[in-house]
Amino acid sequence: MSKLPASFTPARSNAQRPTTRGAADFLQGNDKLAALLPNAARLGRLQQDCLALMPLQFASCTVLQISEEQLSIAVPNAALATRMKQQSPKLLSGLREKGWPIQEIKLKIRVLAPEPARTPRSLFLPTGAVASFAELDNSLPTHPRNQALKEALHNLVARRQNKKV
Image 1 (cartoon, helix red, strand yellow):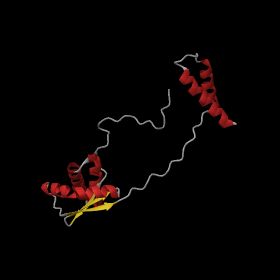
Image 2 (cartoon, rainbow, N blue to C red):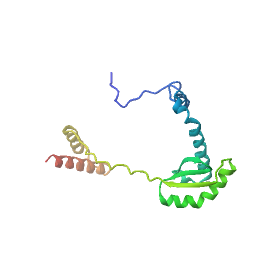
Image 3 (cartoon, rainbow, N blue to C red):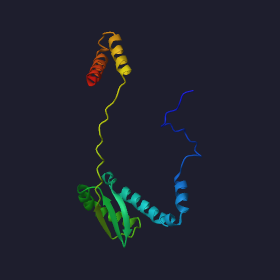
Image 4 (tube, rainbow, N blue to C red):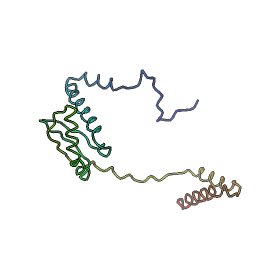
């Protein structure tokens, strides 16, 4: 019997799949979290309305809050904030038409932290694997169709043998 890899996740039936309804039920089960649901739903609807009214380039902007007829929107950089300022009258009138009580739009630049630099991995090939690649290189017939593969195998074996020295 073969052993399944550690990353294997069996398929779930539709009845077992997590749903947003399950998440909403969980949040409603906690008094403190349940109080946040109406505001979260409202901000979600406002975010969707903003996305519908604005060009696709503004998809990275996020509705932060609405209070005292002022809408606060997070913008990832200053260049996009400048473009957003140019488009804000259109957004403001469109949101008013949809019934949102907004008189002003305030933009807040929220620069996302850069991803940490990844350290390059050095791939390790066991000695047996390098020997197998060398054997394959030697056993392939010399033919124009095999030439690129033979060169790649030869270079791989040569690099791996040089690393050992």
